[in-house]
Structures are given as C-alpha cells and as structure tokens.
Length: 124
Image 1 (tube, helix red, strand yellow):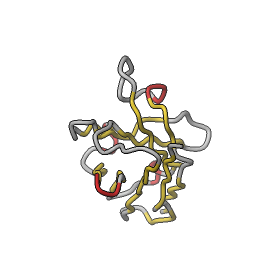
Image 2 (tube, rainbow, N blue to C red):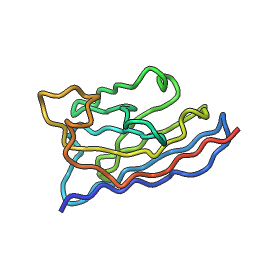
Image 3 (cartoon, helix red, strand yellow):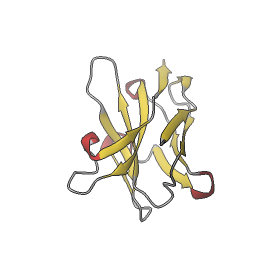
C-alpha cells in the first residue's frame, strides 16, 4: 500500500522558514514526478511546485525564488524548503505522486497518490 506522509509544518512568523518532508512508502518514487500543492481555508487546492522524473523543477510564480523542492532518493523522500514566508502562504500543504501523462503538471487530477497534509501557518 502506497503512503505519503508529510511532516514539518507549524507556526512561523512572516519572513521565517520551514522545511516540509514527504516520506513515501510502499513504492519507490525516486524517479517519479512528485509535487506539492496547498489549500487555504475557503480556497481551492493550488499547485505549489513539482520535481519531475528528470529532476526538473517548476514552481508557481508566487513562490519562485522562495521555495525549493528537492528529493533524497535513498530515503524515498521529497522536501519543500520554504523561505521568506508570507501570510498568504498559510495553508495545508499536500504532497502528491505518480503523475499521469495527459495532464498539466499543475493539475491535481493528474496525481494518483496524496498525503494527508500538514498545516503551515504564517503569522505577522
């Protein structure tokens, strides 16, 4: 059974940093496209960034230069380093895996497996 477990969320002041982890089990995702999404209260889930099977990274414009996705293949884990956090980054962050061709990388429908989410709250 495939499981994705996020961790690392919490409360941080604006301008601070957090590193989220997404540990996968049940299957190896070291050469798979994985992504991070987030959902703020009252809003739809939105794409944050992805690391493709070829380790190419894409980010939404609002996080470019602040967020970085990386992976540790040996640990079957993907990370989201978030720096210079802003109030508008407050959301539940989800990792996703097993991207299906035919979808945009930014489309949540293209990912089969999801974690349970981890809350990130940025305070002023």
